[in-house]
Image 1: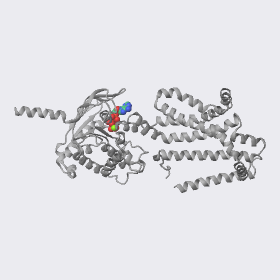
Image 2: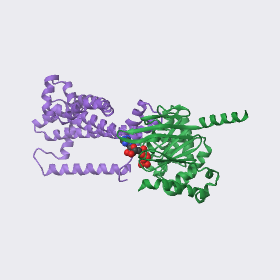
Image 3: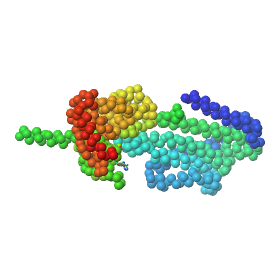
Amino acid sequence: MNNRSLVLKLLSAVIVFGAWEIAGRIPVSYAFPTFIESMKALYTMVVDGSLFQAYAETLKPLIIGVLISAVLGIIIGLWIGLSEWFDWLFSPIFIVMQAAPLAALIPLLVMIYGIGLTSKVFVVCIMAMPVIVLNTSSAVRNTPSSFIEMGTSFLANRWEVLFKIIIPAASPVIFSGLRLGVSAGFIGAILSELKITPTGVGDIITYSRSIADYASMYAAIFSIIVLAVVFLNLLEMLERVLFEGNVRGYASD
Amino acid sequence: MLQTNALAEDTVLTQTDNAVSVSGVSKNYGEVEALKNLTLDFPRGQLTSLLGPSGCGKTTLLKIIAGLLEPTEGKILVNGSPVTGPGEDRAFVFQDFALLPWASVIRNVAFGLELRGVAKSEREDIANKYIKEVGLEGFEKSFPHELSGGMRQRVGLARALSVDADVLLMDEPFSAVDEQTRRKFQEDLLALVANENKTFIFVTHSIEEAVYVSDQIAILLPRPSRVADIIRPTGLREKDVASIRRDSEYLDIVDEIWASLKSYVE
Ligand SMILES: Nc1ncnc2c1ncn2[C@@H]1O[C@H](COP(=O)(O)OP(=O)(O)OP(=O)(O)O)[C@@H](O)[C@H]1O
Ligand SMILES: [Mg+2]
């Protein structure tokens, strides 16, 4: 089964990159480089170290923002799921946050927090947190009541009900919220570098576009996607370590 | 003199002989009167079935005894002390199993002990013993989704047995198994009642099953909910399990119960 999923992943990568190469060769647009050109540009950036410098900059708001969103998001989500009162108080904030047009909020954030790290962390949080909170709270609310009844009848106290029943029961949905949140956080980090101050990977994108070095631009974008995939896979490994029983295969298996 | 002594002893015996006693219990869910002034005693060491049409409040009564629901009125005594919540003296077998899908069979079986703070190696030893007893040896590491319905039911049974409670509350515990397995379970249950000094409260929809396994059958009727009848198939316990179903007393009791329930099915 493991082999099959690896083969499937490789196959889908080959299809995507192949399509990219073909689209670049036609070309679809003069501003669209081929896959191979982009990889060459990526190689150059790796060798001269500029890519790592850029990521040292970009990862700061990303990691801080994602960590805050994950920890705070799960705690707030648990609370909202457990208490009607908390739900009434906080749910609307996150629903609005999720629906808010971020581009319109950025000038506001810059006005309040300046153009530094704080604003960028905020952008990442605004992108990442709502989906984590909302997934967590709805997962907690949907804990089968028979599990809780079972726990109570076998003398679980409130903390045991929370840690041994509610959280494990909610964990698959919490983790899918985290996956969505992390992806959104990546978007937020890049968006903040494009809209607030061009630093890090956002700077590579902005700068290489301005000098029409499209290969470098796509190389930067490609590197973000790769990093995001790595992050998501790490998250999946974490889930497997923490909640072994969550791995129940596919519906068709 | 001698006689009065014997009489006094007798009353003491009947007083303490009930593991569970329910007196004047009512339960309303908003407008719905699920139970109304219900009184019923459960003799220690015996199996009492609750039999009655759907919706007459059997699960409600069981959950009130378990301390999972509070009665609107009335009192429940378990081993002489009033019920205020779940306790170590009772264990529940759930109709829908209520197994934790993320936990292996052994963790599920040991879950009650885990919550009681029993050390891991000790609780796994106990769990292993009951896993064997319900015939699930070799499935300790499996997860609930890898088991059949009947096997899951047995995990729930093993979990309740492993906490060694005095009173076992079983809500239609054999509902998910085929007829053959069901008969096997019924025989096992009879052996369990005979060997373990526990009190069983057993909810079932099946008249035959109730007559087959019970020392006492309480027939519950709805609207207004009440104990319509208590039947004690006393003669059956001494008979060989294999021939009970052909016994004339067994058949008579089945007919009698069917006659009193018939009107509620239509
Ligand atoms: N949580 C609840 N809220 C409102 N009404 C309820 C609730 N639980 C049960 N009832 C009502 O109480 C009555 C008794 O329910 P209960 O589940 O005890 O019946 P039962 O005898 O176990 O039925 P069955 O044999 O179908 O399991 C039913 O009429 C049901 O509608
Ligand atoms: Mg029921």
